[in-house]
Length: 302
Image 1 (spheres, helix red, strand yellow):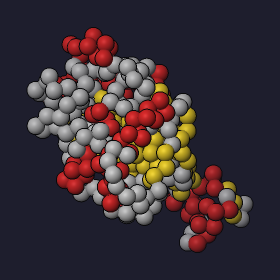
Image 2 (image 1 turned 45 degrees about the vertical axis):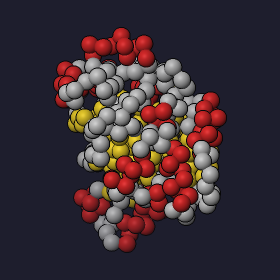
Image 3 (image 1 turned 30 degrees about the vertical axis):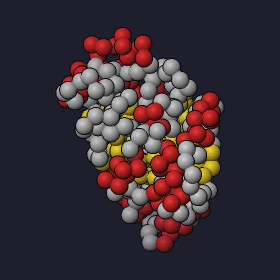
């Protein structure tokens, strides 16, 4: 059975705390697993969350600050130790190539897995598979940073009532789907577009065009909200978002489920991020991320 869910491995910004590990997020998308921003301690968090190295097909790093990338060394070595049988692709800002190489070869180990380096140099499509298109958009942070977005191709939903009216049943339904027409009945006449699901991952950034492009129409948006609104100037100075800014971007983009994460250790009440997001006008489903939480993608629109 296919599963589409976000597994939260860590939610702290800059430094881990007693209750929050450095960043780390696994997106399960049917048979694939995409690991985003493995910070320090990600390998152990994977064990706690029941995530195996064999579950990984891609690694996507937004930027090379330590809380988003120091776990790469351990994760890559674990992939090789466990002899993952399939290729794994790694996406990361091209300007950080030297950091990726240092982390990949931080210590001695035996390479047993094909790890394909696919650095990101500009906005656009990074990969196309039957299940999704992976895209990147540049963000606004003191170091080069990109956000990521998955878009599932649109499909067709068959309408049983219209099929029955036209006398199409059983194996003929599959034939109509394959051929597009059967006995003068076209596929468009007895089906409707089934919109593909959309997911976006937006980490350290100020508000910018990339944030809005990534969030547009998402079913699930994972986005940093390092600061509360009263510290907006700090957010601007350090290249981050506040809870209200993230929520307004999600509201304007028509996001269905918003996941706020990457919280500064200066705040003791995580609930305040949710209160400020609601005050900013976001009315969809809202999650304040915590370590080891699992968040399913919303069910498709009827």
